[in-house]
Image 1 (tube, rainbow, N blue to C red):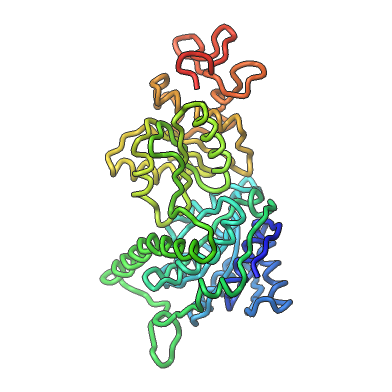
Image 2: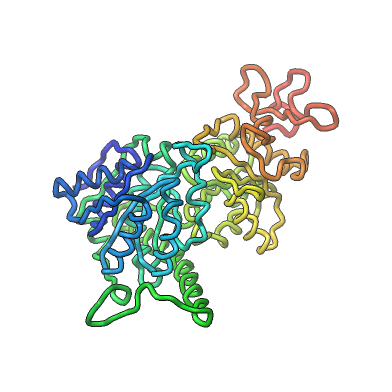
Length: 438
């Protein structure tokens, strides 16, 4: 029987795992993921879930155990976060190269040093090239639903690739929302038992598992893994179509594009911060500004075509991410710019790095980011006048543009100085009342 419950993101994800009926769960607790494996242990103990629950001694062992279980043809699950994910890094490539459709939940958390338990996305984004499908949930309902769809995608015979579902640490994992939980019959109809034929230990039909391949053959295996990852894009669409039909909740594929058809300015982001960005874009639309939002739901396979199409009309694009590749730029920004360049789209793109170590991304900063994009689109400031990588709260021009333009005003003003004079709030006038205001 379907029911609604008030659950944290961790608890919602655990409910999704229960519905998926994994046969082996390998667990090692790490904040802010711990609640997931705690709830699953209770479910196994109480008989709600028939699974082998293996409490291992480290994150490296957790994924190693999952690999071994998957190699026998069992549906497997594990979970981790931050330094634990980095500790697993060696095993990530084994799981991907072995084409084992393991599902793992990662609670996005800052990486050391400095030591920090709060949420950013540097852990998962640092490991994009390790061969796992990567999805990012926006809320707790999507977290639960992604659990079921992750298995459907990972186990698709054309994909057979491990799947990492990412939840923003604390912002989702420990925040409570009302969540609709499907009944077990529905879940079973959506997700039939895993058939690992052709990629499991089988004495009747032996196959080589955990092989080595020298220079003359290695490239073929890597090409096959690449093709499997590309096939995940279609598998996501198929899984979401079936999910919508069976459960009545629809998801938009690899990205969610909001009001991008005619947008002059678009902010690109991923994860839970998209909610605040969506709110600001809607406010600007109500003021007559053609603002849009792109929420990247899947970083792998990367939604190149969808992003190019969504940004086709934009005069200025911002990429907001909780990550930085030191000495280069944001990882999301790099991926976005790459596909735009390949498509011949020279739209200016500004990188906003925020939320590191769980830092708040404020409403003022969100106003400021959209204001910067408006200024660039209108030709009032040049993209090169913005830092190539702007850290919110440190050196991002968005911090200045996000300041209120006058006392008691809830909107942002034009505070950048051009030619020695403020471009917006002159002589006490509100920027929204000036020519070209919002």
